[in-house]
Image (cartoon, rainbow, N blue to C red; front, side, top):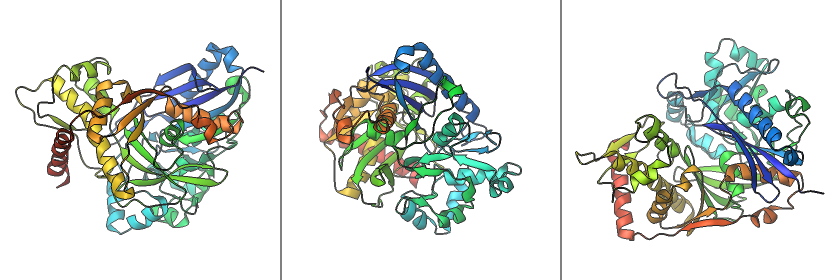
Length: 495
């Protein structure tokens, strides 16, 4: 029998994609559609959930149409998604009652501030591993219920459903037969207790969220439902689901304790595998489920940075400094250094380890000699400084400083960024052969369900390195750069 294939749905912040993988993890075909972000007010970020569904559907159909022979061998579907982004829809019609509120959205910052002042953060953190921040889903849910006419009454009556994007897509793919999610997405709602591993009544009461809204929570490898044949011409099993950062951890095969992956996409997210015991961060990082198989959970410490590649998009689209993001590398290397220019890309507040939702982006050190090359270089260098912020906090939590980081995401195609990160954090960056690690992680999960892979060791054996970046900068120089960054953060944003 010919080797099976796996279809991965990768629904991200800026695009929806379908990727067909071989059993060996090779990319066979990709279909992608860019997704529009809406900014109705300062600090608000929304998407049209109907567009997310239609774009995802069309991308999958394009894969099946364009590669019919390989698509005929699809054994299962895996889903990975932007986390925390919140959708509430009508159970009868399947239609969203409001736009999807994106994880970057800051509209509930005052609500979170009030809850912090009320002394609730310790309770939230001890149960969820999270901090009180508008990043997470709970306050977004509450905002929709309180601001859409009739929503709260319908929710109380069980007529509405909440989900992160994975849950919404599964509902649509199964024509409303399954209202489910996985543990990694559930853990980002601020309503799920990751110690007892269930929806938490105390948290539901704190955020005034009716339990009737919530999906069933499943392991990452599970039967999430059968797609209706009308969508793709036949029915497929959705066999694996994980939020994008956990999916990347799986795609990078970080299955041993203290292994770290760092993803440089719209934002930057570094996760360290910490094993099967919940350990609350003492340095403003998050503790989150890495994955759960057969009821056995593995945790990770996560550092979440809201803006990485999005800063380069802003230089391109907002300032017009170049026409293609790939040009940023040549522009940055056209000058010998940043000429004293530093860039804090806090366009949607600061995430870890600062958690300052009202912070704003800042470019410092401009002079008459400053050019667009210096500004571009500073934006790229910021990714290294932000990464070191996370690793310093991880070291304070665990006592461990990594020698190797497995890196992925769109920005790792930029050699200047990769080398500068390696220099500033004093660790080797390993770039995998298959850089679509988020989608690959979802494919691996679906493949485990379809018994294409035997176990995690089988998956780990598929991981291959494409390129290494070893630190070459003198530590004194690296520390000087980083100290300049820290001084700017402290002086301008945290006083």
